[in-house]
Length: 442
Image 1: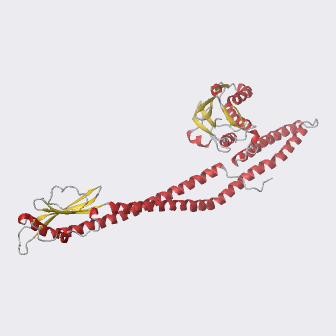
Image 2 (image 1 turned 30 degrees about the vertical axis):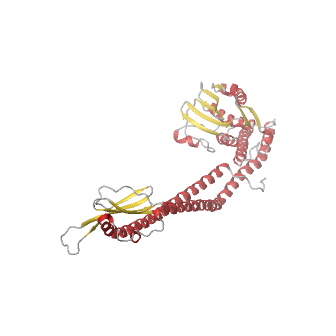
Image 3 (image 1 turned 90 degrees about the vertical axis):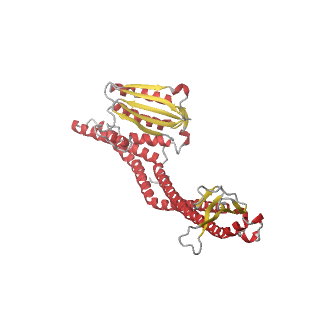
């Protein structure tokens, strides 16, 4: 009967939620990053524009002072009649700025401020912006035009070079970057929390449907086993009755075969439902988990199915090179035997007469890999992604024989994943179909 407790979330559903959550976080991160870059670019450009305006203002002031400085510089004996302080550009910190005045020959007349400036550019007659690691500067020729000099070329008075440090600008931009980064982290965390709640609310109905479907599968399989067992018992009794006529006896045998197949199907559905809910046999009974030699399990399995393979004239081959190197793992021998039985029987039944089924065990890093290779007709490329679907049957593949439920590979995958491993179709070419089972060694 159904249990009242909430079943655990299936592994595939958890993976789906994780992928959706990752996509939400990635999208939110990209959106926030784009916003941050755009905001930083706009604000940085505004800062730089303000800096250029400051330089232009200093250039205008310095240019207006150049004629007076040049006149004093060229006075006899270089005796200045004016106080230098009146001609200094007013700055709060002269280490953040620097002004240079040059005469028309490019000779330095005077300078104020402690900021290092780059050398004058070439050619000098062009107004030029100069940028370096310490700041930004502008080189500006200064020319005057006589008041009544129509048609007279402007007179070159000299040059000025004004520079402003980047230190304050870089500090402000660094504070901006820190603020945007902190805001981005906080916004990402907020998006993660809100997105998680929204994702949980959006997937809750789907999750309930999945739970209900899995519970129905398990409950139906469990409850139907009892009437089937009773029906088979009645049929066995009827088959033993001496009064049964031959026609009735034949019908009873057919019904018994159908009941047997239904019982196998229900057992497989119940097992698959338990594994997909993460409560497979052994999960709830930790004593069944043990450390054992995988090569010995494979040897016993091949010995058991040797007669079945011989009846189909199929040769079984086992390569257990890992036996000497250590092929031990931690798991459930009964369930892993079910896994390899499903794959091995499938390989035997689909191999032609005179074919060969090979079982190879080797180690790959921290995993044990078992390859089961048959010589059957292979699987078409477009069907290879569907081989683990329930009841899937490709073209040209015979219908399941009595005793087969069509769930063998789906059950094998569920058992492998419950052991922290995986099963894959490595190669589906005709005559060389390879299934690989990977399990963590231990």
